Length: 150
Image (cartoon, rainbow, N blue to C red; front, side, top):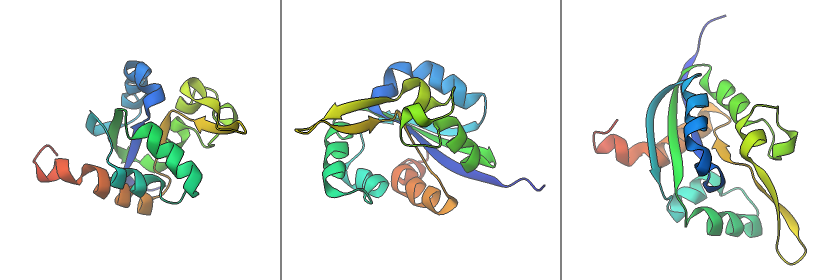
């Protein structure tokens, strides 16, 4: 089977930043990390990541993530996207993810709102396809590439 080398994004969300060191070790053991930075995401960047959510969920996500630091990882390697999804967790609900995945270890189900809707603070965002990776890398990493950091 031919190796397909590609790039993918993993973004540690605020709820997993307390575990940055062990998560970074998990990532570094499996991928070449081309770039990593801790920063806040702009509303436009959040929309590029989560614009497909319904409006209520989008507002909750934006309110939570926009005011806190996240850790960006640009990964490279063979079959990177498939392997990044496996490491992060295949499902949205942390308890439905494989044991040992980032979402299973560090994600939480948080009841919020008036009717206690469950909101998944699932610890990590990951790209799921090469098309999505191109969009997200362009949106999130472009300014670092222009500045010569990449």
